[in-house]
Amino acid sequence: MKYFIIEGVNRGSITKSEAEIGETLEKHRHYVNSGIEDGTILFGGPKSAGDGGIIIIKAKTTEDAKTIMNNDPLATDGLHEPRLIEFDLYKSQKFAAEWFD
Image 1 (cartoon, rainbow, N blue to C red):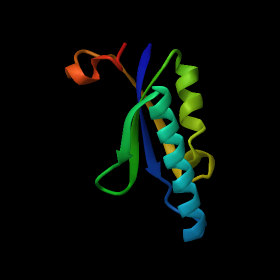
Image 2: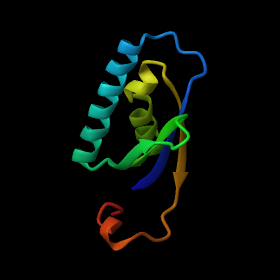
Image 3: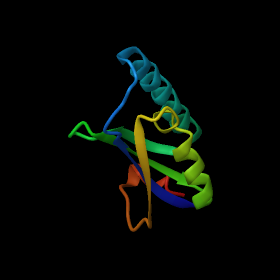
Image 4: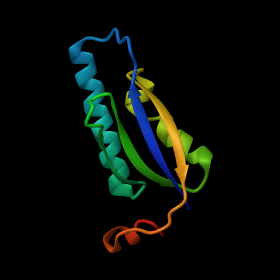
């Protein structure tokens, strides 16, 4: 298994209405919750600076990880510019060890 950080960076100029942005955020939350339920996503959340967010995922291949990243509604609806960062696990807390199979 491979492990990745997806960093989403807010796009500078967004032409969507607040209602459209709210709909996209709701779809994004559902997408993340589905990934948590199926075990693909460990956790995610907005960056404190308010300029995007991060999600920690696992996938069999880099291509699978790219698919997960590119299917996030924040990416498909043009609100985030996603970036994929692969990392090698060195050590984790005991409570997270099961996720990092």
